[in-house]
Length: 184
Image (cartoon, rainbow, N blue to C red):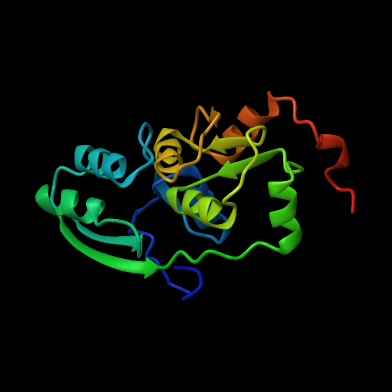
């Protein structure tokens, strides 16, 4: 969102990202990320780490999605920081093609990677019939819980909340249709 609006961030302003994927996206468009929570890649984890690092009250702009609760803003405000919380973006599901829907329902898709609670909701909505043999993999424990709340039986949870860790976790499983993955 910052990049889309060509936001100029002064060098003296520190940027924090809730997870590795967000940090990578920010860095890819030229923003310097100074903090990613070490243990808990969530708003609560971010708040805990910021509160521990910033003992003096700071002015903080907290960007979040429309569906996210203002946990970060609330916790930082309670800790004495001057927080301006902004709904910066909206998560919008993109309908899959009819071919992908058929491939999932027919068991031709080996694995579905779930990277957030909103992705879990879209997977459940767009694929009401997922075969038992389709591997459902979550990027972390929080996402796994969100997926299970959406009715998705997660088989694999990445040990780190990164896309690379998620792919690594899935790579340890034998996937029956790997050979025909790119067939017409």
